[in-house]
Figure 1: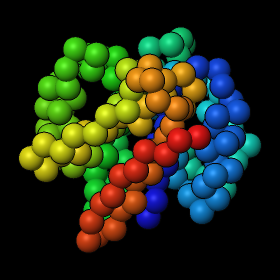
Figure 2 (figure 1 turned 30 degrees about the vertical axis):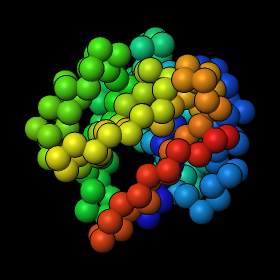
Figure 3 (figure 1 turned 135 degrees about the vertical axis):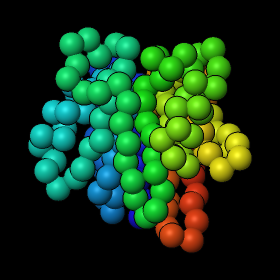
Amino acid sequence: MRVVVFSDIHGNGRAVEKIILKNPEVRHFIFLGDGDSIVDRVAQRRKDLTFHIVAGNCDYGSFFPNTDIFTAEGHKIIFCHGHTMGVKYGLSQLSDFARSQGADIALFGHTHCRYYEYDDGLHIINPGSASCPRDGKAPCYLFIDMTKGGIAFNHVEI
């Protein structure tokens, strides 16, 4: 099963449409906040797709949670924007929370920088920003390919 993860669109609805068009076989999309109203509008139009959405620090008045859980192919994914877990100052709070929930994947946004780390059974990943990256790289998103036999992650430029 392939899941697409993206974050931090900050008003760029075209980025969402590009990601969907580039991934016609994907049915599950995880959005990590900062632009949740745009993604929600797309989700309302695209009932054939499933969107898992959390609120970011710029999603004022959001009705989406700050953190959520998605399980697929035997993998438990904790995902959040990251602002409530202090990800700009370190990943220990996110890591501790993910482990306490029995997750093997922890996803976060907020920093606008691509990131991947594997630490003792936990994959910690930031897809970067789909609209305005801060790491000097192109806007991007993330594939997660999951099977019962393994898992693979790839950052993909838009």
